[in-house]
Structures are given as structure tokens and as C-alpha cells.
Image (cartoon, rainbow, N blue to C red):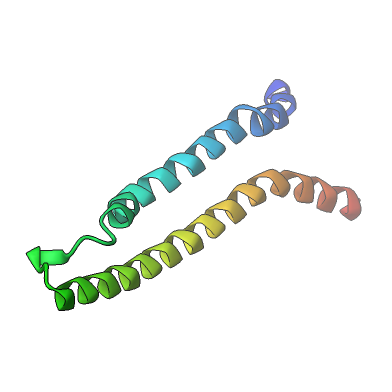
Length: 104
């Protein structure tokens, strides 16, 4: 039991932090793949539904731009929230120990 209490901060800032950081990076990769950002950017200037006239190209461009901005906004918000959670993982034990020390 005493060994677990001593080992806990070491685990939290080594193995635990590595797992959280890996999960953060993999989560962003999965979200990017789920939203199809790479495919959307790759096909940004290609017309949708085989509409190769100028009207079809303009409509396709604007629709894809709107879609891209929405998906990038979702990606940005999710990235920021995930990063905040990662920072909280780092700060939380320090705050808890500080609260315990100031309580005594």
C-alpha cells in the first residue's frame, strides 16, 4: 500500500502521461479521418456529381468551402478541449497536493 502511494506520482507523470498524450494524438488523427479533412481538401476544386459546367464548379466550390470551415471549426474546438484535458491531467495532482498542504 505504501509503495503504491510512493509509485503513484511516478506513474502519473510517466506512463500515465504517455498514455494520455498518445490518446490525445490518436484522437485527433481519428477525428481528422472521421471528418474526412484530407479528402475534402484534396477534392476542394473538383466539381461534385460530375457537374463540369461553370455553375456546377462554383456551387461545388462554395459548398465544399462551407463544409471545410464547419469541419475545421469542429476539429479546432475538439482539439482545444482535448488539449485542456491533457493540461488538467498534468496540473490536477499538483493542485490536489497544494490544497492538502494549505489545509494543514
